[in-house]
Image 1 (cartoon, rainbow, N blue to C red):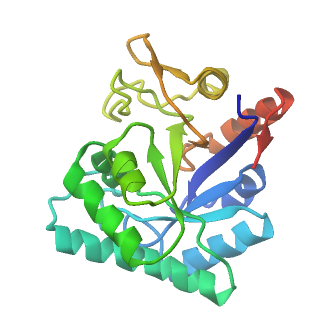
Image 2: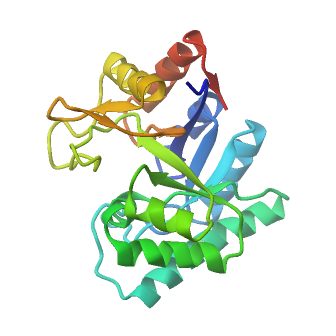
Length: 245
């Protein structure tokens, strides 16, 4: 059993709770203009992450602030490549200004979910990663289309699971249109993460235990109770003998 856990949170999305969250986590995903964020928020998030020794990742999405990047956009591959590349480069500029490296890339929302199952979308993200000539890791779901493609193209990956989301039997996330898609209870959230971390199994929405691998766990920063949930989770994981890093 791996006693090291990375806790990641999406930041720079307009909630304003990052100064409370950053000391509790080990990596962050900074919105870089697609669904949220701009040069000012990126600069602020980079400074906060640096001061708290938090690994920095880019969080590109469909260019859709109106729907917070949570609806699929039917875009030509060239246009999708261009916007993802532009978003990541915007964050890279902010990192270069303070002599920091990009640790990872994690697509956001509908883009992340689509790349999990759709080869065409996954290929676009892989090609962006290759074109940027960066050794940044790609945060991806276990056994997903994008994970398999990344490995084939020698892009380093970290398997990610969601601490505050319920899963279907095929390891896709339960749609947010369903009432119990998001885990709101702190005890349930901890048990969900602990089970995956210790047994490599996730309890799905139907009650089945399915095999899963995860090196990093995401708690959504836009959850109204995010600070409490993350604080409770990290405290209990440390008490259980894990290191958050």
